[in-house]
Image (cartoon, rainbow, N blue to C red; front, side, top):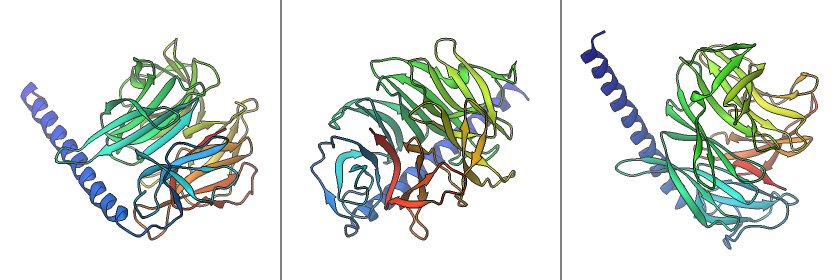
Length: 337
């Protein structure tokens, strides 16, 4: 292919990507406005100052004035009135006094950004994202923020998307895109072509993290080393990992239906024994699960028949444990202990 042809293809792909992003932003904005103007579907406390004590931070998807805003409920009363903040986020996560927010700014030119808030939901900084917000996590000490954005596509289906995942320092600077890290699979370096990374979860120190690596139709749970800038495979067929509070197990979504339309079950891996337990949730869970405690997981699912609305469910980590509704009209849960 000539240089002119390559440039023509590059320009065409860029135009398509920009058009898709703009269309997504306009569609999101119209839906957001409609749900904001609907009657309130849940009890709200609009104080917006942040809760003390163990609580769950999440994106409120209940119709009404608080739609799309970050909300909080006590762990002990997840179905009670929710405290609604001024922050509007597509994805949210809280740890160590740092609140991470990924959002879409719809307009004539739709943009995407990440933002960091303090414990009282005062914005401290923001920076642009290269595409549609997907995943975010904060380290336990609140010093690092991970973000994943879809550069192309908007679903984790084989060969149909590209991601950009970056680990940033709250104090300033970042470790760059994970695509620049060395990927080691089964003891061998994997060439940098055709790779994607997403779904970071941080370890209990300032250097270790876990993430998803993908090449072709294969995915791996990988263990990351920030100082060495390496990613080493731990387990195959695992996506969007979440490390348990005690650091002994990792939960993730596992594609059990190879092909163009994935079906994700929730699985839990014991890091000491490498034993994997697939849980009893039969619905496809396209989410990065969150640990409520060392024996219970939280995750979001779209509410059936209600576009733009979701619910947060819980499930125990033993084989056969049944799922149950935890917070209605909610998405992107984060547990603050």
